[in-house]
Amino acid sequence: MAERPARRPRPLIRLRVLRTERLTPHMVRVVAGGENLAQFTENGFTDAYVKLCFPVPGVTYPEPMDLQRIRAELPREQWPRTRTYTVRYFDRKAGEFAIDFVVHGDEGLAGPWALNVKPGDDLLFAGPGGAYAPGDEADWHLLVGDESALPAISASLERMPSGARVRAFILVGGPDEELPLATKADAEITWLHRSAGGDLVRAVRDLDFGDGVVQAFVHGEADFVRELRRHLLNERGVRKDLLSISGYWRRGKDEDGWQAEKAEERAKEQAAAAS
Image 1 (cartoon, one colour):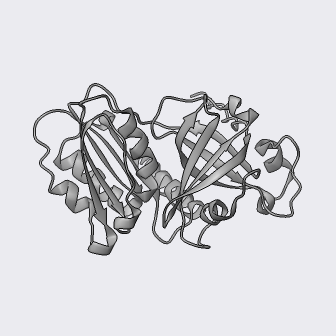
Image 2: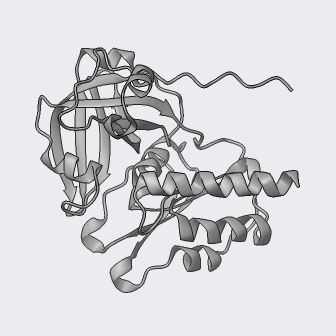
C-alpha cells in the first residue's frame, strides 16, 4: 500500500487584536482583525477551529513564522505551543475574527493570555479545521456541551434554519455563566449548573427523543462525552454519520497531555483491530 504523503503544516496567519470583551466571569472574547484577515478562508463548519500559536518568551523565530522550519531548526522546548479553539464568528465585512476563551485566573496558557492581551498585540494561528454543521437531513437536532463547546453550539444555533427543532443542553458553572443565544430555530435550550449538580449525561438519558432522525453534536470534557457516545450509538441508535462527538479536554490534563493521551488510545485501538 502506498504511503500517505506527509501532512504539510498550514500557513500561520497573524492578526492584530482589536479589543477584548468580558462575556461572563469566566469567559473572555478576543476580537482581532487587520489586513491579514484576507488570508482566512471559511470552511462552512459551525465548529470551525484554529490552532492558536504562542511563541516561547525570549526565543527569536524566523520571519515570516514557519512552523515546519522552526521544528526542523530549533530544539523542541523552543517550539511555539499550540492550543485549539473554536472560531466564534468571522465577519469579513466588519473585518473581525473572534474567539471566546474560558478563563480561570492564572491557570493554563490561553486563558491568562486572553485576560492580559491588549489591542495591537498579535493573534497567531493556523486553520481552520472542522467537521460539523447543521444538516437538512435530520428531523431534529441535539446539541450538548460544556463551556468549551459553547462557541460551537452558539454558532450552530445561529446557523439553524427557521423552525428547525433543536434541543440543547449546556453545562456551565452557575447562572452567571449563561449567555444570550440567538437562533431562528424552534429551540429549547436547557442550562445546567455545576453548582446545582448539573449532569449532561442524565439530561440526555432522560430526554424523550420521540420520532424522527436526529443529528447530534456532543463535545466537551472527555468523561461525559465517552458516556454519551455509548448511549447515543448503542441505546438510541443515532446514525454515526449524523453524530459529531469528541472530547475537547480532560479534567486534570492540559491540551498537550490530553492530545498525547488521545494519540496513545488511538494507537491501542489500531493495534487491537490489527491483531
